[in-house]
Image (cartoon, rainbow, N blue to C red; front, side, top):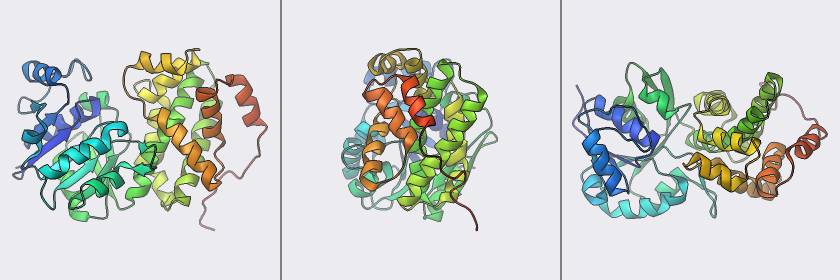
Length: 338
């Protein structure tokens, strides 16, 4: 039996809808908040999010609202499932509506551009009395809605917080693993979006499986190199939030970042590709942010630099690939037990 609790999921996109529905199906009192009043009313009427998760019936007990105060007040667990661009502004609005000890969980996989802050760091700044955690992993919302067997990671040094999130989300098809390396888990979730764009481009250009294997493997090496210099545990990248999320995002056409890359590979401009996908692809801004930070710290990230040149400087893909193949050849495995 579910423990008495009031939960709110902030953000009516595909993933926010999917996790809110799982929590409701587990017997908890949960509200899915969205900015768009019309969409909230439409979801309430149809019990389906036709805009972001069409063709999937939602649990009859799931509630919908566009009233932020009514949705948040009295909640002991708050999930933030909004894009990174509007994350801080929403956290500031939520702060006066919460009480000390409230659990706040970020599901957003991005980095704030002008501060280089992760979403959990923004939550700590804007809600200093809250207990903060993150969720990240290979979690395509449409597959979760289909009840495909899925696993994710809740990351926090707060063991009780991890247990609470596991209670809310675990089911016969959705498993939640815990990890204390919040920084590593969150960086992995943000960084993999960059390489998913590159993978989408390679798919559109009909590159072979050899190429895909090189891309995924070197992407994992590059993102773990960057994150470890910033204090993450390199072993985190061998788990669900690292190689698991990277693999699914680089191979699935359901990934928004993959879709943007595919459109770029078809010859569309970045603006045209973004418009075609129709939802926020965090990897675009993350590429720009990571490129600048890597240069500042002197971290070798050739794939990020190459993608940046293609997206923002309009360099031809073949020209960039040729430069990559002639670049310095480093060791295969950078982190060993020796």
